[in-house]
Amino acid sequence: MSNVEAQPAELVCESASGPAVVEVLQPRDVPLGGPRAMTVRRTLPQRSRSMVGAWCFADHYGPDDVSVTGGMDVAPHPHTGLQTASWLFSGEIEHRDSLGVHALVRPGELNLMTAGHGICHSEVSTPGTTVLHGVQLWIALPDAHRDAPRDFQHHVPEAVELPGATVRVFLGSAAGRTSPVTTFTPLLGAEVVLEPGARLALDVDPSFEHGVLVDVGEVELAGTALAPGALGYLGAGATSLGLANTGDTPARAVLLGGEPLGEDLVMWWNFVGRSHEEIARFRDQWQAGSERFGRVEGYPGARLPAPPLPGGRLRPRGNPPA
Ligand code: MN
Image (cartoon, rainbow, N blue to C red; front, side):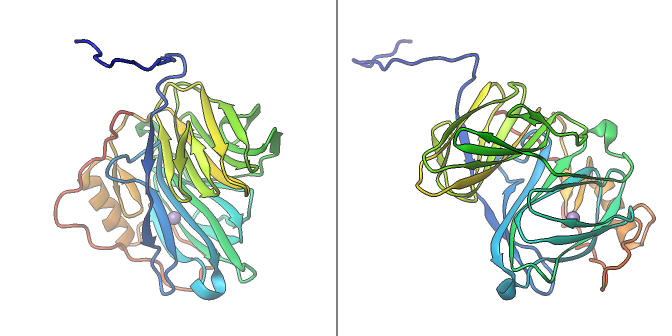
């Protein structure tokens, strides 16, 4: 077999930095539920890709004028086998959980809740919130740690100023900073703000795969344009991530990374498990008020009932290779 082009293009094969083939995952609109349903843009999981590292769920919302949308009001609901990471750009959310934590989620502050064996929590935007804008992310726990006890960590990362960019590393290491927040698999989570016209080459761990979720602005990942709300995926092997703001207004993105989890998950509703039977048991336990999930104190209203299980068997989600 031979290349039969008359003028073959010169091709630089950079094995050290890996192939910069960016998959673009488009968001879909999902109503959050409740009496005043707020809509979020979900990029993970989706049919073509369910995870980036152990990041298994990505919801992006706002900027929402809460006087119009009613804001966020998610009644007590359960989780298993995951951590929830909340990161806001504006607004404020009141968090209550069955560990007894009552916390305010604020812009630039990471709140990481470990569900492990089982937890329940409520999330309500505060009365003082005028614009709600942020992301809600889930991290799947590896099999060895998915029954970990409930936990809650809070961290305010320092803003790292680079030429043309400001980076806040809330999980893992980047831009010379390391978050003190503990995770169960190697992960990266950071907010990146790019000035108009800025280009940033961020050193990254080549064992990680990465996702860049664009909030606002005209962002390119490794030369591929990403619309606001889209998530650009780059497989493991890269030693550097090329980010650019090609517009004339500031851009902002959330950078997610991690070693491929290498485990098949069954995700349904708010549960991460490993089999249909296990998910059905989690659902029964929530419906029965099991101590597995505990109770949220101080939420003014009823907890969320689980929806009915779908007719067929829930099947594990694997992840295609990059
Ligand atoms: Mn939740």
